[in-house]
View 1 (cartoon, rainbow, N blue to C red):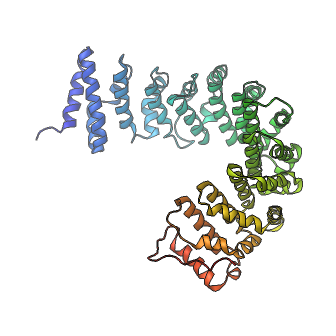
View 2: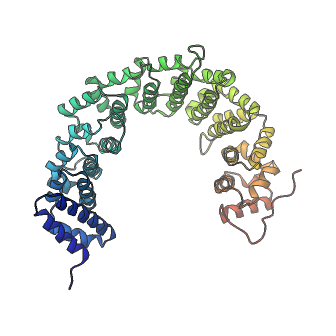
Length: 512
């Protein structure tokens, strides 16, 4: 029986490996490995896999990765990566530890990424590991610009941190020395390190204490004291994640980080510019994301750092549309947290500003207002009590039924963004007993919801269905509707969002 093509190709590779590395041999190896890569993909994989490794051991492949020919390195790395796919982390570590260390230090990024991908197979804190890996993996974060190797190195370190491996194996004295060297680099390089540090601290307070003692947290705090807006924005982006623990929040709080940030929001502090606008937007987002930081009490935090009236001021007074839109979105994000919504209800100015902005808005600003209102109405899947009353009070400020009429008109215009934002408001409203009653009392919105129209965007149809599903599943919903309407509602939900009837769906009668 004639040899299969992949068998002949493997034989050719073996013969070439025994030859002197002339340019012709190098070219032959390139072509043969490129063909082998295609044969592994074409399969049957197991057959080609076994045939390859029975003739070409991994040691030979790793040796070729040190060849003085970049094209050969790339093709061999591609084949080696395919052959390593079924190999477990335990086997990789036990068999290739020396090659792993060498590969991490390899000058060619394709070899680094080949080796780094193997670490993603390590899924258990008890898995075998080596402290020798640490400095070399950290070193892969080095570089003035993000590339595949630096991105993958960060992913690996965060993965190992999540698995509980980083603290034990990747923070040796040599690793810490490497980290500090990296922090002497440019901002892009430094923030790759900070991303890993923050991820580790999120997992355990002991990581925070370690990095604090090593001076790395103090170095991080220095990033906030800068005239470089992009650095400051990256700094603020990480703060809410750090505050998942009360320990790190107290450290940051004592360092006046939030006091300094809050002071920069005031319009009177600096001349309007693109950079000052970007910075304020970043700070507003920081304070809105703090609502969901597990290490804080939202009422205490927002009581101490009065961002809500500043957001109200920006909505009412700023000529900067980005700032205005961000302030509106941030009020919605804060109000989506039940504890923070309680604070907004007492503070009042932010919700009043949102209601006033909606009434005077149009276009994209109105869409942002609707999204914020939906976030607030949707603070809970089962709203009740004082916070549901807070939502009703906001609805009252929006002129109650006139608001519902206006939202319905926005939805019926047929624009996707406005339609989805309006339907989101309705879907969140009907979770509330008062909202369900309001919607049930307004015939036009029910007509629209029950009228199937395949020309509407799929996302709009999905939201339309979601509103009806929420209505049908709401407690005591049945008593809000007449028998024939309830039958249509339940049938619509039963049929699904994209049901196409043989004849036109009949909606309710015309609006009274």
